[in-house]
Length: 54
Image 1: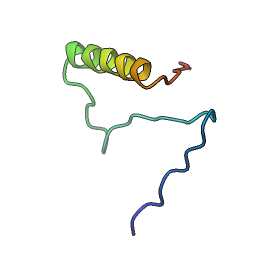
Image 2: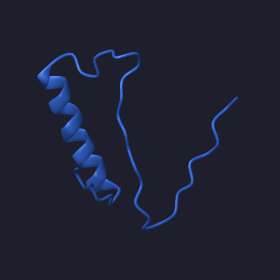
Image 3: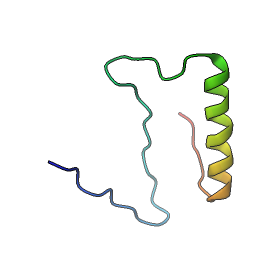
Image 4: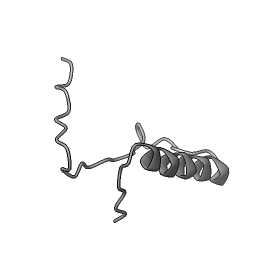
């Protein structure tokens, strides 16, 4: 069964979780993780999304 669409409401906080499948590695080197964070930051600025770290 397909998942239901995600409800998006403007100016409402959303929860984003990045996880692995079956405890597999998400990034294979520190450089991979760094590239991900840089792109994440760039896209958040480009689309005017505020990121609140935990």
